[in-house]
Amino acid sequence: MDMDELKRVINNFSFDRLKNGNQGFNQILIQLFGMLGHGKSSFINTCIYVWQDGEYQNWAKANEGDGGHTIHRIPHKITSNIMVVDNRGLPTLNAYGSGEIFAQLGNLLPLEGKVDFSKGFTLAETIVKAEKFVKTSDFIVPVFVHSVKHIIPPEEMNELKSVLHTARDLTGIYPIVVLTHKNYGNLTSVESSFRDMGIERIFAFENYTQEDHFKTRGRHEEVLKFLQEVIKDAQFRVEHQTRNPVKEMHNRKQFVLNYVHQREKKMEQENLEKRKAFEKAMKEKQLKRQEEELERERERRKEAGEAELRKRREELERQRSADQARYEVDIQAQQAANAKKGKKFLGLFGKKK
Image 1 (cartoon, rainbow, N blue to C red):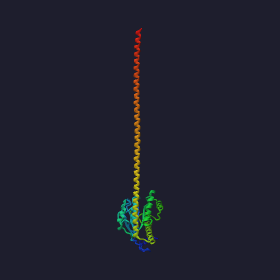
Image 2 (cartoon, one colour; image 1 turned 135 degrees about the vertical axis):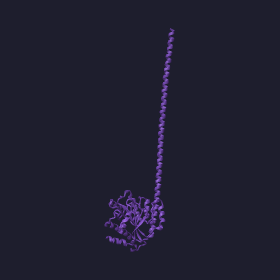
Image 3 (cartoon, rainbow, N blue to C red; image 1 turned 180 degrees about the vertical axis):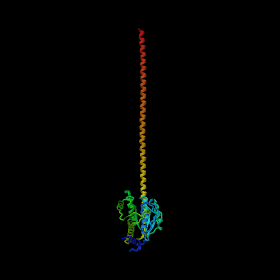
Image 4 (tube, rainbow, N blue to C red; image 1 turned 90 degrees about the vertical axis):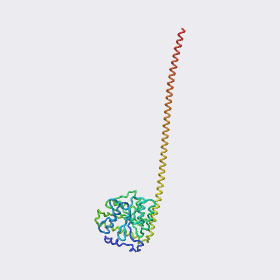
């Protein structure tokens, strides 16, 4: 199928033309999600540039030098029946960020509305308040955008896989993966990582930018084939299933609210375990301090006992020396007395003669 035919198919798409009718759907909502600064806004610029085939503009306000500027859900029309949404990106892979992503993917937050990464049950409250502002007639197609410049760390693989599979459970469609900056990284390795997570449909792009918007047939065809794939997803789901958009919106809301509830229970349990571990560590530390103090006391007593023993030994030695000195003095005195008596005796003996 050449580009003209691709554009005709895309432009003519309407849920009203499907064999089962629109079943309550009005337009396709291509929901872009992913990490901060991976090229979601630039990809939107690329799609609009290819579709309009006119002058390049920064419609999505992409900023290559400062990724992650999008903090609202910004919709952009491609055709009258296809809209692409620039959702706020994940700052990090964790349960709180993922909850906000699922609320956006489920179309539970208003378009043009600000997205805050909140903790606790604030997200659940936001979803309930937004009920009257969201539309049930949008058919959701999840599209995960990832830059090839970023190799997925092994420690993040399971968490990312969980996010992608939860997006499938939430929307009923396995996410399409769009890889950006395909010429600036190991494309084969990144594609392999996503296939290992169960992703079947992967499109690799080098986005058009303000600095590089020279039109090429290859880039134009890639974008049009991507849009065609999105349409095929919507057609297949609506033509082969009986759908109820109002009920599906309700189910998505319940899904995310339950996710928030389970997340908070898990967080509470983890915090409880952390507190227990902290208290145990503090008790062990206190016990160790007590044992160390007891050991120091034993050492002090031992040293005091040894000092007392040395003192007593020294006193005994001084006493022995004093006694020895007195003994010698007494002996000398006795010897002197005896000598004196001897002289007196000799004197008496001499007088008798």
